[in-house]
Length: 158
Image 1 (cartoon, rainbow, N blue to C red):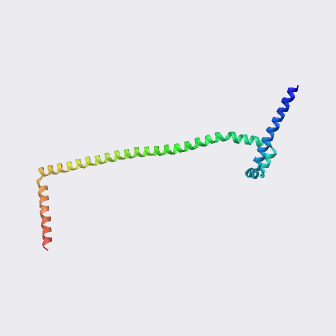
Image 2 (image 1 turned 135 degrees about the vertical axis):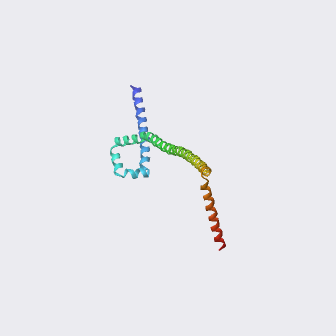
Image 3 (image 1 turned 45 degrees about the vertical axis):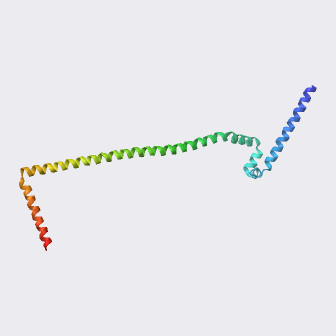
């Protein structure tokens, strides 16, 4: 029994020492101006009168800091990636749209050149065929040109 009483006395002494260190730590904490200001509020007074609830709130705040921080980091990275992805996607869409526009405009230009070439070929072919089969058309055209030249020369003389 002697050993039990010695062990219990040493345990009591250790407990008193631990309690004294906790009391010193708490007194330093209560002496902090920010904590003193918080303790003067209604919430601080409520938590002071309900230590179990205060411990629960403190544990919840401490334990939830890492998951909340990780979630906020994930949300920030997701927002940044979606913004960057949107920029790249829009750049890709502009590239595809610009390439499509270039192809369409090139096709329209080629079509315009071909239609112009066909109409000019038809015009010269038809005018040559008509001049071969109906020479009066070209003579009337030549007469009209000479008359218009004569009228312009008369105008110049006046």
